[in-house]
Length: 566
Image (cartoon, one colour):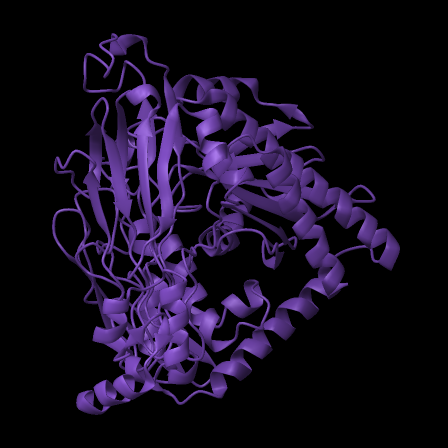
């Protein structure tokens, strides 16, 4: 029944992917889906989705039940909200909760979350100074009652966003996926001849919690601290964590972390808990199912008013900037406990700027060809790109891989089809991986311009430019990121920027840190990296002491270089 339940929620998620309108959902998989018992406890999550959405959703459903108890819901009901403090941390994420019925009785709930392409306001950037500037806020309310959709709500959404067809289409997709989950659950219950989820749910939650507590009990008790410095918006941000292992429980306290920012990189507590728990789970017990039972063994605290626990109306639109760094903070604590399981730091935070165009938003009167910019096509698009992951204790880091978010990169063709922009270059970034016995993952280089040289605006939110991913156990740091215009004109890594007519923005995404001493790396692997264009011969000599002659490792020269190093 457990395997079947996983299939049910995965079909729920795949329905969302197949019916979504925006590229963020159907191409990148920036979503979550799961099934909950009648008390609002998450029993199972879909494989497809992101940990930030999944773990935030695990806490969100209880808020929906407080507003609309299950016994007051009817078949065909759907309830929606994008309240950052109750759901997924910023207004761009909509969470939908729907009851599931069997033989006329409500037996549980399905919930799902998507990142919509736009929610009005200033857009997906950190420029807002209050959440009121960041877009349209929808409190917990019905999207549909008895399968009749709330047309008034849909009209309000349509009139407040830049891409209404995509956003409203994604709301219908949320309802479709929850309906499909309910249909699949009904068929499962008929097949297994069960009338409710109570016994199955209790078995799942107790088994998962016991397994997580057993994994924790195998660790040495104590307190372990780590600190990570980020670029921040206008000044560096410090994240401090104290991880306490106590018998069968783990608590993470973020006292000492930076105070809230004046800009929208702040994190709400729900999102802080989501990525903290994910960081712990990755190392402690990745084999244990992620649900309300296993999550109960991990608790989190952060001082109110810190950058990891802001209250309304602080701005939070770009909360992933900080949130995606939390697993690396946790890894630094756990490296002191089980170093054989913990990878080096990675690029972590997604580079996912929102690109807007059209005469109403560009800062230039004329395009490159002299035409009036007021006639330019209005558009808004979000692109998802990532740097390199950190090297693992026994493997190289993954190149251009989104960790911890897990979203997929949106294909260039998909973006160019729906928006008048051109990707002039997208390739692996040579020498961006941190050197080590196991090298870090590569970053990438991306160059983007407007179609026909037209200007556009871009909401920048790029991290690890001043503070690259750190290596571990002697491994070297990954390359820092960089952002520039092709013309050489300066551009800031954060905030609303303008790309003039005929110019392009150039993004050099950061690489992951290395693991282990570089001179311990097999020289033949270094030579293979050179042949693959991952590193240069000069870097091989400098970092690894490996000398290449005619594409072949000169073992005598390499041995001499390494002995001199020793």
